[in-house]
Length: 581
Image 1 (cartoon, rainbow, N blue to C red):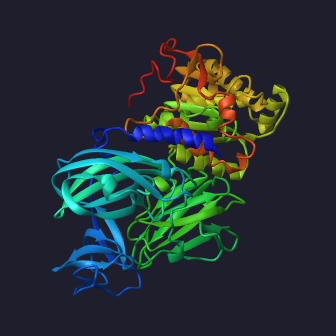
Image 2: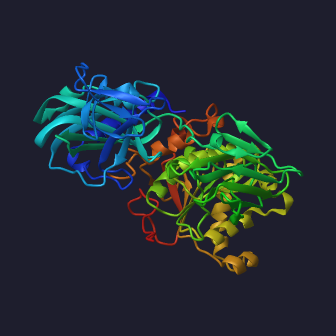
Image 3: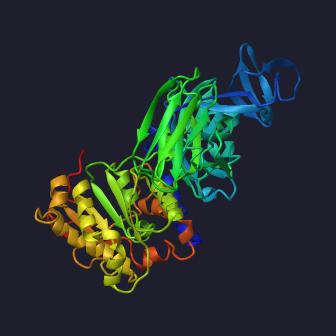
């Protein structure tokens, strides 16, 4: 778990980043809409709401009825200034549900701004849900309302909106006078973007954009299991989903979907990878729409539904297996928040080989988020079997770090032993030759770069040592056509271009994991690595990124092998590699 010292240091860095001029912040990311329309409807249970000429309820000018959408013009105290049909007036905030959608037309204006974001109060979701913005705004027309939007990257939507009126509309505003503190009702953990817009007589102008990060545990995305009907053999699981155990009399699970056709996706977390599973889709008339059979070998699978599907039938092969968690989502599910793993591509740019689930962060630092942020094809190999719960932690962590290809689990025994001979014997059970298996992995996925652990085992862990030894020896063997002719026949020989070992003393390089992943982001590889390590809850008491990651410096690596010459800058794994796609 991160220590308070880290939080203070990291958010001091964030504050510095956010004090950049707005000129560098106006460009919008493709995942974050540049402008929004704000509208309201009645909250659930309300049939109609009186709308008054002013906040003092001097005269009622109309009624907002159920199903009618009103546009937000501004806000004053406990009231929103709204307009619908031919009615314009004030209605109570607590009776209205705010909706934010991307506008169809561009509303970028010629505003000149010089704003800064104070993120200190955003260090944790357990703290006050507020932040402060200071600076000046100059606009061609007087602004009468300021809108604050908090866009959540994971959920791909505006999570919170604050509407504040300007008491005295003006072309020049000190925004601190308008809003000394922006307060949001609730904020989830993750990467956000704060957007500020202003309006002048209904015309909108974009004023400010800045990235922020909220620390804390991710909450599962809401599923629609309660809107579905499951056949016998399933059990509810604390609101997170359902489990299903097939039996001789119940080999097929039938799920009746909502009649409105809203169901779009189902995820299945297996006890262990299934040999295959089949999903058949049924329409409203009971006719089959076809079926889909998958043999991914994943621990978590996802299946998209045809729009016409009103029922699905799930069956699996493989003895003594079951679905630990089943979740059905509607069409609004956010891609980034629901794990939808892809197979490892035939050709990898980077292969990261980790002895245990969590070593990829403790000792290899920001390697995975750094490579993923560059858009490279990254594969992660775990040597040992840490148990089913460790696998779930690993996949949650890798998804947070940015990996989208399913990790490779070698499933060799996780056991503390003193000698390398015993460690090799432990991994060589059931006729397995660990050396040959590592060579086959390299030949099958043809990585340009491999990053793995310390030949000395970091703190002396024998399985860390064995991992590094197997990889270092596999480099020569994988390019030798005389070694393991069977895998040569299947995949061909392969020469890796570069291999880095953690803490290797020769040809040292030092990676800077604190540099932002992109120019407009406050997120660094190290920060994401720490967020990902936090998903390994079972390891928090024994290990920490503030101790192991520093004691066994996860920034230091040595170039063990190179087919492209020595490093010159000595600060980047990818120096001299052509990884363009």
